[in-house]
Length: 348
Image (cartoon, rainbow, N blue to C red; front, side, top):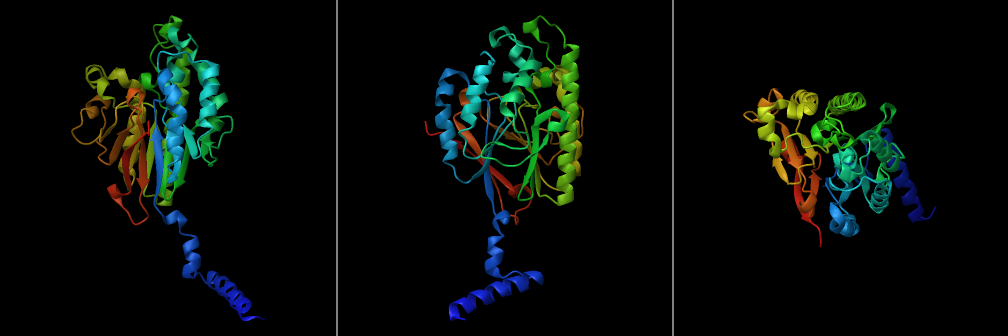
């Protein structure tokens, strides 16, 4: 046997024998280390708003595509503003734009594209019919992301293909359909309603139960796997500073969020690691701990503190001039060092 061929055969044999003994040579170990490395993901929300931003949206997507370090991107809802028509044609247009993402794209619907579609200037649609249309247009392949395909676990069996979860480098991600407008409990005034309808209440009850099930399942699996952190994503800003005074005066203003907040607190306090909540909805970037000891939101929701919950709100609407790039550190990082983030301006 020629010397080079002998060396090749010997190397293959050595790897095979070593692997069988539970020992992997350094060169082979490097091949399996990709999952140990840091990675980044991007988050946008409340975009595009209005004709000007709709025209810029393809360029915004290309800016994100150019960030080759991103493992995936999440759009946390509101693909239109609150005063434009919720038409099939518009949904199809945005779906076509979403298909140009070169990263896996996770999308959770926002209230502007279904909950608020009862408004006359939105077309006076039945919001539940619009939710069905959104699922038809954007979630036609449950278990797969938009853009580049990435497998995700969904709640399709419960009728909520938009609720997904997945894990990357021992960080658990859970994206759930929680809506602004008090989680869709506000009356459909555009249809002449002055109180929530029975069908509206049934949808809220079913969707909220599914959200609670997914959140609990996310934490259960994260604990079982010894994950380092949990990242929850929603459209709704359940701690919108613009609502605080009203919520302190009348906690029913945010009653649709109470069970969800209670579950997040319970699971955060049980979990041995940091928990991050990423949302859109309120349009102004923020980073805070809304359930830390002493927070006024604890008076609103009537719960115990959850000091390990960090919330990040992404810019949107007129402020949607950037995306937020989150970086997950390698496996050596612990605690607050696991996740860092920065705003990345769009190019134009």
